[in-house]
Image (cartoon, rainbow, N blue to C red; front, side, top):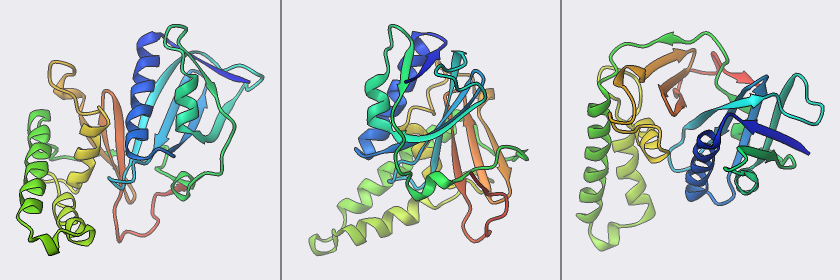
Length: 227
């Protein structure tokens, strides 16, 4: 049994909240865990947003059961959530599962360069609110025979594929960050901790609570790590 010792109960609660949000969008969600030493990265892909969500978790000490160097495994998000003990600040790594296709293609570990033009945090949150409002308004204006999955998807793709400010970041990345608890209010986090980076065909929105990575269409496989 592989036991993860998190730094404290707050870290355990944040991990549990992240897993719960992933499961809200996909009851059968899987997550890929990568760890070395006292740093753990949890990767997930909420299907509604077509992005990768990354939650960094701090470990109090390296994991147990003889794993002295690294941990890299894809597991059930639901089983991992069930194993989280917030009081003890521990989690048990479930048995490995056959990973979904996205789990084999993760953003690169290095080579990230800062991208200019990211608006302030308040403006990012306002962008999400405006996009959600527009989607609901336009969906409500459809005639009954047009209110199909295809019709709703067409509106959604047009809205969520728009870019943010002067950047290449699609609005759907902001929506995912907001929905997964990464884009919190100014009272919870300083605006200076939000940043946008690029590496090859990938963009990454970094927040104090996690990152959203999105691969740019039409740019081939430049910068992609298959691990």
